Length: 97
Image 1 (cartoon, rainbow, N blue to C red):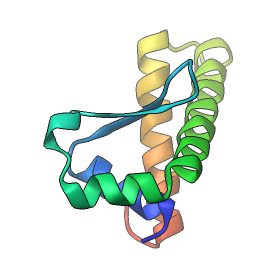
Image 2 (image 1 turned 30 degrees about the vertical axis):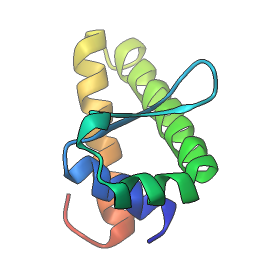
Image 3 (image 1 turned 45 degrees about the vertical axis):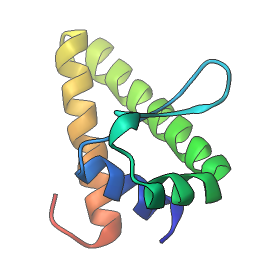
Image 4 (image 1 turned 180 degrees about the vertical axis):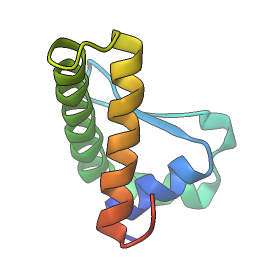
């Protein structure tokens, strides 16, 4: 499983992934991770962190455009940007959004 596929699989199971200010990866709820999950995350932690940071930057940029150029509230802009990110990721997998 690639790091991107691992992120998608974890998110499909309801996990959230984020980069911390200390440059570490936070997966929550951590108590629900299996030993297999922890091993896969440990194997790809650097790549996962890079992908999570890139996704966050992409999301923030799109939300900013939607907010300032599109006239949406920040909350609505973030919601739309998250939907766009999900659609882009689904398209890259060749599945419907």
